[in-house]
View 1 (spheres, helix red, strand yellow):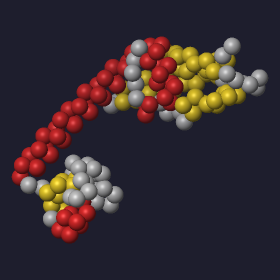
View 2: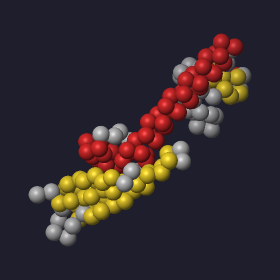
View 3: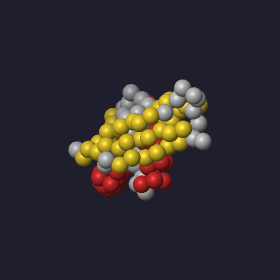
View 4: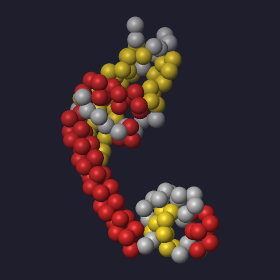
Length: 147
């Protein structure tokens, strides 16, 4: 039986994908749990429209990211945190704090996935390379001691 998945289902397929599964699996498991619906002609048309809409939205989002990279390229952001005398931070800096600092100081909203740093544990200067759709940029993060 052909169904359209409404959510990601491990070992079956991803959201909005039309897949063929056994009728019993579809009727007794996927459809009752809201994971899939029958792949009728109308459902397939609706699926194509949703895919096109999602693709258009992703392109628009990526173009905003590319514009943001151009704005922050070769600029620096400063984050101040409490640290020990040896320069080790009492609490590490994660990507969410970096994106918040970029937004606060430069006025640009970028997704956390762009920043290729796991988390920062010490004072210092960190350079991060950013890339989206072939557009590359670099931002410098200064981690300073909070008084």
